[in-house]
Image (cartoon, rainbow, N blue to C red; front, side):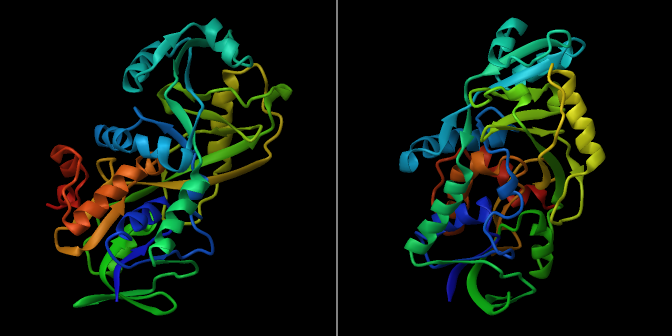
Length: 357
């Protein structure tokens, strides 16, 4: 008998599994042949403590020390620069408040990113509190903790049937029996809930596309900050000597192995290009990921009110990696009846109860 059977081998499932493995036998089922195949493997991999709704910010703050200190730390300095056009002052002013950023001169911004176009850039701001996250090591370390505590992490296990008769019986190539079922299936969480006879919570998967460009003009981009267009209309992030550029779209789609929309990607690249002196001459690769949102845009964590043995770890949106230390601890605390260190108002804002009429 498995104590906690977790469906989903992305950051939500693996982090929850690592925490729960201290309380019982854990098995993680991943449908694909690799962990973190979908959204987790296509993340922008940035930690910015002020990014997201209030409950997300509280989770990020609560888990920051884990990401900084655990196993030597998962964070390296990156910085975040907000870039606004000359006609975007009003949106820029809202963004710097929301993101807790400090306005800088355009000349200062040019010193940091020399390809910015002074003819089109009218506003800039900086945050030094943004960091790259070593997402692959984080995923693998959580999986390692599960195995070290006697659990299993299984790939190529697509769930086809779920029954409840005292305990949960889950068919995924073979039959697994568990006392508790943790739904961490990302874009597919509502489908898993329906299979289990639990009312779905209205998760909406939203596509975000990405392109990898050669280093613009041959520049060394390694120490450039991540750049964010005002109103989150595009972003660009250095990655292994290249530049990742996204149109920052949030287009609702059905759960799927996502791919970039060529037109949306082209429009986003044009918005980025307008702020730069170096044109986009070549796209080396492109892809897309799905970020999954609850109706109110924040995470869904904890037991379902209709059946406490069905536990949600869902709705991570674009915040999965930066919230995972605190979010997974909350899932484990709620699943085991342990007192959480989080404020009760934050817990209520994340509870599945809020989405039930």
